Length: 415
Image (cartoon, rainbow, N blue to C red):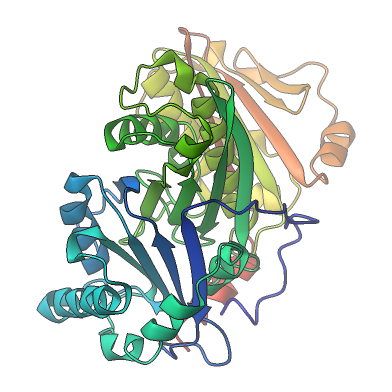
């Protein structure tokens, strides 16, 4: 469990101060869903007029809250977000759908919001019924105690095997008016792309319409959360949502509905920076990890091919255990390239660890020095670069090493 696990050695040394965002308030509580002695439910209350966008898991076995959110997203409006940890409410049949509906009804009664404006997420154990009546005892207090300064505590409440809360912030300008973007995420295991590999929520006071939010979010996710992997397992509950209160309109920020509006350029860039920061934090908290690994593939036949090759390397247990053992076993990278199912030519392949080329044109590099590469492998961040030599396709993905700690965490997860 999150509160028992030792802090990841790749955890941030400090956390950013999260500026308050006008139009959104947070609160947390102990509902006793699974964990004892820690918060396990959080609420975000948003002012009327808040717009919302979302991206969800591609799993064919999605959780009941994912189904709920997808059905409510069409309106583009949001007032309440409720997230619990300890129970994923996934693979729970009609009972799970009923628990989701009851949770929303409890939140609606406490907040005064319509059911169509309430969004829900659950994370934790799959296949166990969620007792939604536990929310009845805490929901009124959550609504009453919500504060604009409560986001960091909210990030703590949604952790499961995470060893630290994940938050990020940025200031963007829209037509010269500053707007704030704050994000939080949870995730450490069951992390693989195809959206969104965990739970993440981003809030802004920018007055941007739902269609523009959705376009920016969907595009940015392709080069952030969809480019990370810890263990190749896509969750049933993956959710990424973006909420815009529009409060910056009072300070002169223009209301923008067109996703192609050039005034969104800086916002797009800052939103992507926040998502990339959060996605990297998820990898850095990978269960049992000690190394952060960046894999760049260039020269593939297409960008899609480059991505498949990069993910083949990133998901290879042999590559990941070699990194854990600080062993520059580039032969395992050759094997991962070869099995990816994309075009590759052994005699054109080149591989680098950092700025050291270890393999070239189908052979070990003539200048290869084991001692130099071994020293590089002791670093916390390992850069692997592969040149395919066939085209202009490129991709960058991020992963972590695979240690005994991962096995211990997941072997003990339900016990």
